[in-house]
Length: 109
Image (cartoon, rainbow, N blue to C red):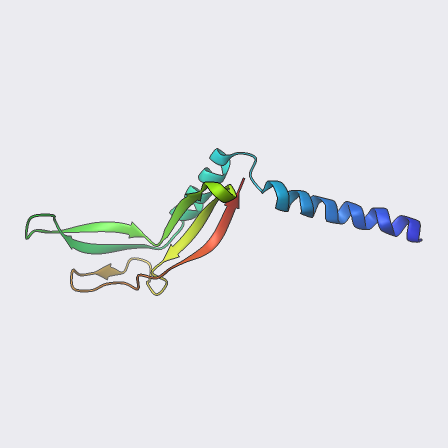
């Protein structure tokens, strides 16, 4: 019984160790594409801004997610910004959403 238990445990733990060592994605491009896809599924909201050098106001659409490449750890970090906003919410020039950002997802390659 013990002779079977050791190979069974090794076969279960080895793939986990390989995943942690080499990452989920086989290339940097695959990791970037996965992060970009995740980013697109974020919450969309609009915000008014003054156009630079003028007093005109323009509305811009934003997404509450972003990706940042971290070469030293071979991964893309998925950030969530403005955690208290709702889909389709609009912010005027005088209003400001919560500016905090947190890492929510890791895309290792």
